[in-house]
Image (cartoon, rainbow, N blue to C red; front, side):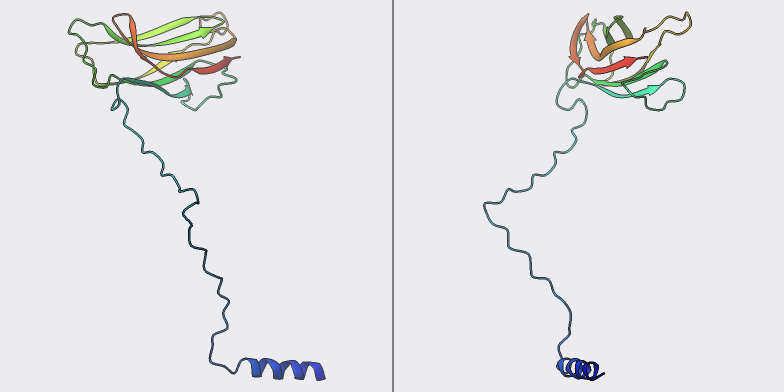
Length: 167
């Protein structure tokens, strides 16, 4: 009991000053010139503003529209693509189309033609069938796919390839 009275007296005497008893963390150190500066993220450049461009934007189940796992595609799927010609002007009589080249156990190419004049930006969902119960389509195996903007049977630009497996 004596110790508790003594402790109480110390606390009361210690709190008699008019200062607030709040913990304050020390200020952070000032940045030095040798520390690496943070790099701002580059802004997204609109497609086609830097020249012709092709992208595969998504791979989805054709029946539901849900994204599919590229390591195990079980049924017909869609490859969503977007292609821009940039500032490139097509000749008036040019044959312009976007195709998807699928390479693997079974090679195939699908194309969609655009009339003249061709639009600046073209988007298309390629529906890729998977062989099931006597139906034609891709057989099980590993594949790569690439979207290309074609002008007079020559590729103007190609997308980065994607790799997938059909079960």
